[in-house]
Amino acid sequence: MLQLTKRTEYGLIALVHLMDQRDLAVHSDAVFVSAREIGERYPVPRRLLAEVLKDLARAELVLSARGATGGYSLAHPPEDISLGEIVTALEGRPTLTGCEAPAGDHACEVESVCPIKSPMTRVRNGLWALLDQTSLRDLGSEPVALSHDFPASAGAPRALGETSS
Amino acid sequence: MLQLTKRTEYGLIALVHLMDQRDLAVHSDAVFVSAREIGERYPVPRRLLAEVLKDLARAELVLSARGATGGYSLAHPPEDISLGEIVTALEGRPTLTGCEAPAGDHACEVESVCPIKSPMTRVRNGLWALLDQTSLRDLGSEPVALSHDFPASAGAPRALGETSS
DNA sequence: ATGATTCAGCACGATAAGAGTGCTAATAGG
DNA sequence: CCTATTAGCACTCTTATCGTGCTGAATCAT
Image (tube, rainbow over all chains, first blue to last red):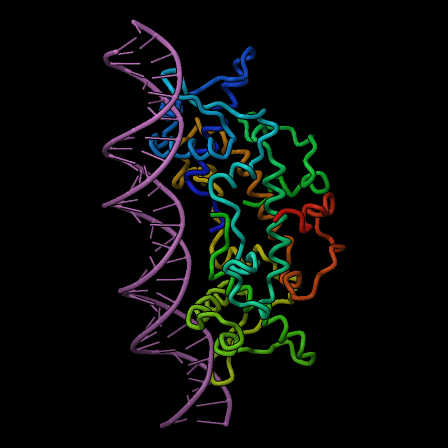
């Protein structure tokens, strides 16, 4: 399934919300928002959302504060948090196929006869490069101008356009 | 799960095998290989492999021939079969998140409040552009030179290198 | 102190998707 | 005919995700 999980989706919504709150508060860069508050703003299972935020905290993408006025806050500027990091934190960085496995681990059963190992690794790296080069800032609601340092789109902006459905 | 299914993996292996057989037979471009033969060459569940080949035939990516000497053969030159087509045939073209759904269908529950709809569509298009621009030929066992018209890599060839693990 | 609110951690049941198999037709060659 | 192959369908088994409940620890307000 070439698709993100619900947990990742919820995590992205939460992170964008944290970014917005951070942008609003010009003075302090530590604005803590509770999981409950986010769950009230979006039609998302609050309990699961809390679980996701915990994972993001473990991955140190967000800071957490306990107590009555506690909550979560971005650990870094939105520009420095990549979509790749977020996805990796919430669902790991799995290989595209059973091939190209870490050899010593549960290596490809097809072993030496597998004809698609190396090429698939190349495609996979391309995919993750795409994710790594997209920042949380890019996910903001405002239509981002394509004219920032976006390597994957620099050579072929059409590749990121709304071409295919 | 940002990962291809086993069915797709088996399909890719089969298609590469069909390509190799096609390359070997210089005279006729209609070399039919049976599902059983492929299943014998690779440690793959033959029954499932057959099911996958049927799907590829329905998608008209391969030709099928019944009877004693029947089997499957590539419907087009390997250069004209894209990885995107193959994946689409075997597992569809799902959206990355529940957002960015075909509006009238089972549209995003987060509706207008969803902050990540449009940006995710952009990322998704980038991903599929990557797949669409990779041909079956590129999946061949021989290390393909990076110097062909590969828009997504033209501007940043490093994006397709063996950088990240 | 005391209570309210929040995050942390674990564990469990429900649901859905994928993996894999079995069987019966229909087709084509020897 | 007999054999080998694809076509189509249905079914079970396994796995991962989804979603929830509960307990404990930290922190702030009173």
